Length: 169
Image 1 (cartoon, rainbow, N blue to C red):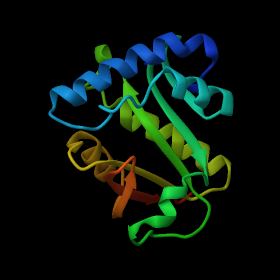
Image 2: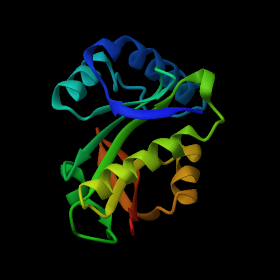
Image 3: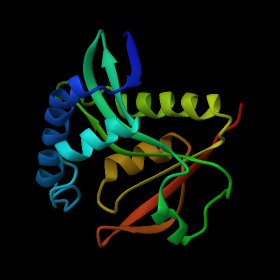
Image 4: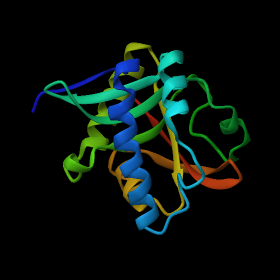
């Protein structure tokens, strides 16, 4: 398959929101409270794009995944209940979502692979991320991808499992 990872543009918002809406419904169907509080929403996507942190995964120009990718920009990570593996620069990613038509193809891992490449191109050797305590699929992806559980962070009043992966060349 011909996968590309690129910055999202404002013309992508409708497609990104469709992907996220279905991911929100899947989380609800799984019995999770993750993403059930009005977040994420189209305004968040718009802000991601305006800040230059929204990215899409495409297959032959069709958007099939979304994430936000930031450098050293997650204030809550300073309040980790636990210990990070490193204390250097890091890339953090949030809001990973895959199109419903493309589930089961290991595409979240593909997004992480692209993020690793992005980090190394910035000479950054740490990836950090977090997920809800009941998002077993994402926890499994983190573990298969070489991430280590580091502790708990809180977002919007909810505890989240925080992970880090140290990258080597």
